[in-house]
Length: 225
Ligand code: C5P
Image 1 (cartoon, rainbow, N blue to C red):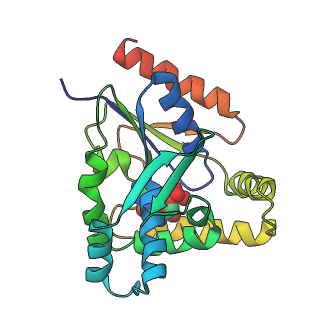
Image 2 (cartoon, rainbow, N blue to C red):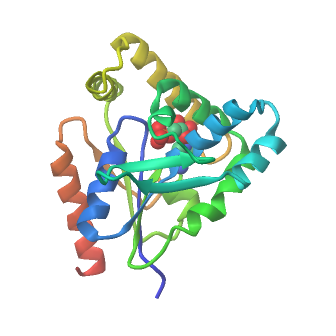
């Protein structure tokens, strides 16, 4: 029997990261935050001065990135790049922007494919991103596509950043989200689109717990847990 995988795809701010984490904890499964990988390639390339115009060098960098996922003494999730703790650095809007640029390069996506597939380990994997259900785990038994209105997503992101003490205008955030959505949906390689067999959830008027319960209900049904 192959190891079960549950994919959660959707645009930025749809809440997929939070939902994926909660679902993985409830099921006791591994978690893959694929967006973090693209953010890391973006950050590594900026730090090393590798231009986003040179696909071959970017792919090379992606293939040999020295990354470690773990947690600090308080149990908070942390990510290290070349020994430096970069968890906060990869979450900025600028890092998201650069991630979406490197993510549009086929050679970079190809370079990260095997790493992502290797995360499928027993007892199971919850994978969140843009192309988990369409490309990386096309054979997943449960695929969720999570969306929310652009306005709601901008508001959520605004609150998230404010809570971290980062001051940005809601209008600027809305513009960024729309730009990123456009780039992610229109790119020719692995565009953001629901898999044919994905179950759609519009989370605009749902709480995080509502969505988590909905997804867990499907998981229990499919895997008879
Ligand atoms: O999900 P997150 O906002 O961290 O992703 C950052 C960027 O990485 C996205 O805007 C998207 O361009 C890219 N990405 C992707 N495929 C994935 C996950 C993220 O192209 N599976």
